[in-house]
Image (cartoon, rainbow, N blue to C red; front, side, top):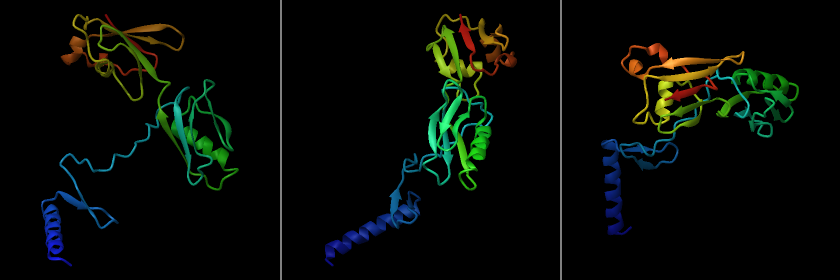
Amino acid sequence: MSKTFRCYSAMVSAAVCLAFIFGIAKPLCGTGGVTLQDDAGKNQPPSPVVPHNNDYVIGTEDVISVNVWKEPDISRVVPVRPDGKISLPLVGEIQASGLTPLQLQSQVTEKLEAFVAHPQVTVIIQEVKSQRFNIVGEVQRPGEYDLAKPMTVLDAIALAGGFVEFAKTNKVYILRRAEDGSTRRIPFNYKQVAKGKGPGQDVRLVSGDTIIVP
């Protein structure tokens, strides 16, 4: 081994030791190597995907992942059809709309038991497309938005970019359709809510709500 190479190896070893001492390097399990990591943690693995809240009720156009453990030929990512059903190998057509992920998971498991020994099924909502609300009027980005997670009126206004200059923020209201087809008007006074005087006005949105900002 040449003197130059031995010197270079010694310098590399010293650099690695210093990296461990000052906490800027961590071993890679199973590789025997080292990865240098900056303070922002850019080399950290991404956070795992969190399944959708199991209280969520599946609707038409939602995209669902049905995974059957060790059965890739049965597992599918499927959209919910306008009739509320999905199609799966062996299972055939099954109603999905109106069920929670856990309820659909239970029904798919039950149908697969005739074909697969002890099927382990997981149902996850991949895309929420059935739950939507509208916000119109004097906001920066009026339009239709997905209601993919619990959201209040304040959340919706923030999502739409906030009010424009001449918005009448004390006269905002929500139009909500009831089951009998009638429409209910829910007032929302932003100035009061912002001061903590009317927290009950910041209602949780439901699919089909329309927020009007005059």
